[in-house]
Length: 85
Image (cartoon, rainbow, N blue to C red; front, side, top):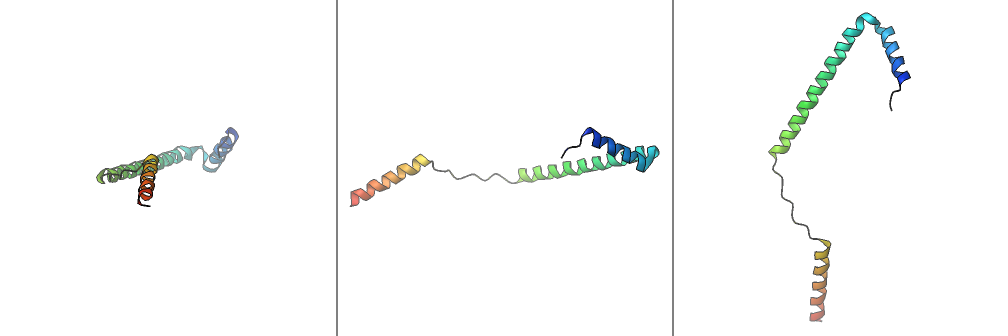
């Protein structure tokens, strides 16, 4: 959902009518402070997450056999069965 030029114009006019030109600078400062606080909080949260990730050592993954290794193992097992029969 995006806002077009006409929608933004309607919002600006409504804000001017509701708050008046004298209150707009004060309102803009309040919005700016709120945005700054939100950025600060999200930055701190991201820093904490990155610190948590650095504290935990990465667990080594067990080696995974390829499909070719599985088919070779199946062939070897079939040959062993044929020899015993």
